[in-house]
Image (cartoon, rainbow, N blue to C red):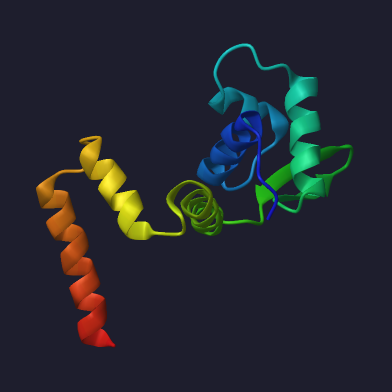
Amino acid sequence: MEKLTNKEEEIMHALWQLQKAFVKEVIARLPEGNHYNTVSTIIRNLEEKGYVAHTAFGKTHQYYPIVTIEAYRKQFMQTATQKFFDSSYKEVVSFFAKEEKISASELREILAIIEDKEDKA
């Protein structure tokens, strides 16, 4: 799965929310200042990369994501963990704890999820 630019990610988030949309509907979800031709080009690039497909309605296209946000999130986290944390998820969690981005109660919730999965295995 190819890494996306910030603008491509922004457009994918709009498509994930909308599930299927015409370019004008995507633009309505984006911050001001996005031009139709630019967004249309980026969506076509996303289609070439395998993230998006379309249904044709005459000369217009309705686009929809073919990569789920969950699949993209998983790939993103695997790549970031490998590049910045020596493939250690413990280091990822430790980083967020040190940066005060995660609380003790949130960590207890995560631990409960892990223990629940272990009990089911």
